Image (cartoon, rainbow, N blue to C red; front, side, top):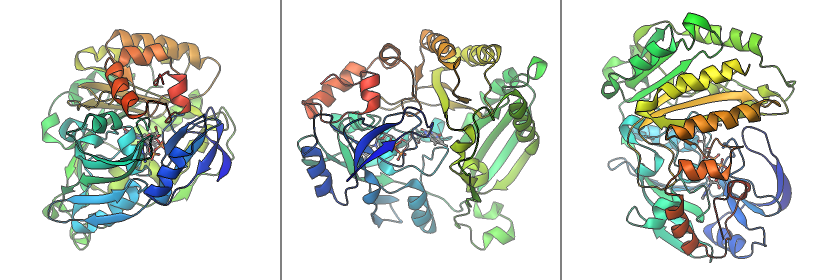
Length: 448
Ligand SMILES: Cc1cc2nc3c(=O)[nH]c(=O)nc-3n(C[C@H](O)[C@H](O)[C@H](O)COP(=O)(O)OP(=O)(O)OC[C@H]3O[C@@H](n4cnc5c(N)ncnc54)[C@H](O)[C@@H]3O)c2cc1C
């Protein structure tokens, strides 16, 4: 047990908490029932950008000590895992069986518990939905220390999916994986000259691809504003692989080449470096059909460099991610134009189109456009984000709690109309408010 400073991936708003690393569900129950007045929250690998896995002055459970993979069933695709297992580890173990995690976020360095807590989504949302859709059951330690197995029949199951750790601690889960022939993707890339064309192209042929994403340039202005790369892929079949890769088609081919040192000054990302990065990224992938790419190339280019968030320097950065309904795609342009006019630079800009959402009241995805931009923290950012919040909410959109670090309780109330429904289920499971986080206090998610 140690008092430790914790922060999210965005490296803002650090707070101190007593960190406990349980090694079993019994340890979790003991830590939950002995929690002090500042309560307790689970933490996975800390890949949320803001403060949902922090608890100032209270207890934080580092769940990476519960890391067993209990079973993998090749035929059914069913896996039984502890909540502290990372998606990276699970993929390495499951791929030799020809099994693939249907929902993978932009990094594999997240735990199963964190994936359930935020109900994460990937580039395949329009086909497979979000993480909770693939959970068959989960074991939850509730506020009284009891261990309960929940299935999609239970309201508390759906309150836990996307519930940001505030219903209890997930200690184990059964997931259903998909069968694949290879660990590679057959990728069609289109280099597209401006934002309107990019969105128009991204709006068609969705049904032909399992995975779709676009990256675009938000620094270049004028006729090429929002030029970008539309990347769409299906899992490669064995026949599609070149002979060299066919020898070991399920190889986990995803290297991490370097770890970024913590030496970068604030202000490194500015208009000049942003323009340079955007130019290189745009040029690196010309229009091409049918390229075979490995896991890192297509899904996780950022995982090549460990701790890349250090590039933003000691003040950290903010990832602004929201979703707006499909018929309000105009908001994407408005937000980017406001950012540019305010002199804010984002080099990493990702646009996806979500399919249908699931039953979880706090799940983020809904049919619509979702945009992520990364902006270094600076004194003018707050006012701009307040303005963007109003634009997003007026369009019927909402913000993603896993990326959120600065908005208001009112913005969350407006964006998540089923918040009270979630609270009712949560409060029944945790009437004394044992589960609490910095985010829960800041956004008034919990009332007990
Ligand atoms: C580079 C990068 C790219 C990303 N790309 C995507 C993306 O494409 N799509 C996407 O959806 N997300 C994405 N994310 C966000 C990330 O997937 C989520 O924040 C995820 O929740 C992080 O998992 P974690 O294990 O690090 O959990 P943490 O960040 O430690 O915790 C996240 C939440 O889950 C809760 N939690 C953690 N473990 C448990 C448990 N055992 N029981 C109950 N609650 C628990 C915590 O209390 C907290 O509220 C990305 C993050 C990074 C850094």
